[in-house]
Length: 323
Image (cartoon, rainbow, N blue to C red; front, side, top):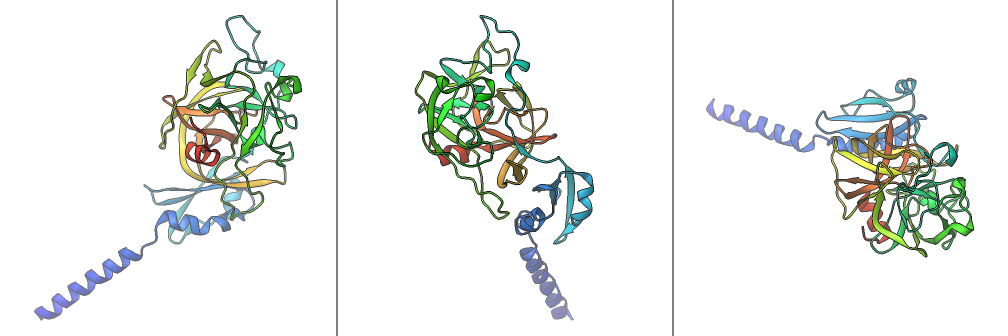
């Protein structure tokens, strides 16, 4: 009898050990099912809540939830409506955005020399985006869709002029400050694509203030130096062409999202930061995001409820720059 009890106890222990060893991980399950989730029309993103052991599916509209499963491999699925995510290019002309110019302030949409972070920039084939900052190895840093693409999301040749301000704010070839030097390629219209950053750099042929970014009152600067990682709940800051300096809270640090560059051209980006709106609007693409003066990443897309930020580690390693 005693031997039987011991044998039963050992058997239960072994079963529990095996079941514990084979219990699926919520992050792994999410990764395995991302492609099929993005195949559902209206799914904007996928993530996880590790504390609650939930898979998060971001959707454009509430009615999309009917198409999304309630459980995946035993894990509950949470639906969050965030709207359609789009790359952020300027849609409002400069004259409606800026306050009257004063001798003690800078205009974000005017010609500025030397150049610095937080002001209008672009190539001749787009409207305008934001100059994130001048790197410490003297490059202009912004998004690929600001420096390296046309309005149809086609990549442009290396050497394409970089204008400050961008064309939508009156920039012409007379305002050229450099030329496209390098960009991180983006794979479009592939659910299984592994995109991590929308980023590019241009050479600088005029004077620039390395690491300096225009402040909230447009009368001075703060400095970004070094990089950092962030956590959900952290407060971050950006300085952009359209909305100036804004601060808000991180709601996700490992989202996979579907970003539309045109009505029919989209790209999947993995391991992205989501920041609660209001944080950015059209024309803020390329803004440098920081926490306590350290570089967090670049604004490049957004919806009504979130801004998407590609992480510093992918921007820096992909472009080989110093921040």
